Amino acid sequence: MQELFGGPSGPGAVLLLLAAGVASGLAGSIAGLASLFSYPALLAAGLPPVAANVTNTVALFSNTVGTAVGSREELRGQRGRLARLAVTAALGGALGAALLLGTPSSTFELVVPWLVALGSVLILAREPLRRLTARFGSDPASVPRLPLACAVLLVGLYGGYFGAAAGVLMLAVLSLSATEPLPVTNAVKNIATGAANVTAAVAYAFLAPVDWNAAVTLGLGCFVGAWMGPAVVRRLPEAPLRVAIALAGLGLAWSLWRDATAP
Image (tube, rainbow, N blue to C red; front, side):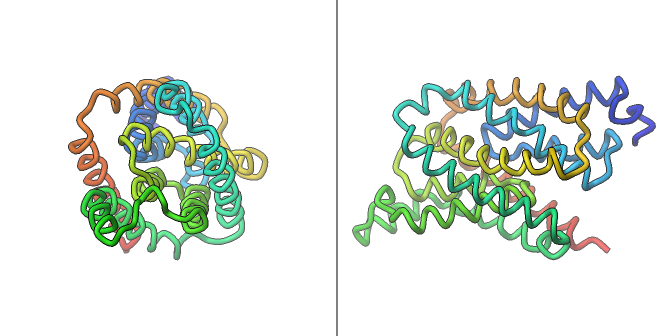
């Protein structure tokens, strides 16, 4: 595969990474599935798995910038909430990066598919779960801050450690803790997962084998796709979009489980 694209810096690899970056930015800002496109593209361009993982994390920083620019309408009035979520997720991302740099990932990879599948099911079952909590007199918007912070911290840790579909998990957590339109929840999700990603990216930039040419190329594409994503979310019907995100997450969970259990 490396010969096909001429290595990570070859012309074929540059075009591949730019295209994968746009697709990743769109998928990340809409569904939280950026790595579905970016990580395989880095492998196809010739990077070994560890270098591809850390390079992917660094490149996806531009995803956060792009979604922040494209989601200004949805993020109005969310400053205090964003600050709390970003700080909590960033702490989780730092812990996740420390775990990745200090421990093997083989055991954790067996748990990841089940986490992604759980997040996808929660997104799919959001409305029935909201009706159930309302029946017992509980408003999702009144979820205590401590349980919400713990959930965000754990998702941030997961995002810093492994990252695949962290946005799906964050969207599930936020969807069950707020009554608001999906585009708003999605925009807040992008900033929270971005905070976790940024802290991990900083650690990897100094301590891990990042391929900077690949990171910059992929990052440029990610910025474009992420900037376009919020406008797409704004125009799509909420229920079909939520179902599509959940089904895509379940598909990724199955793929990750297959890879983790392959002989």
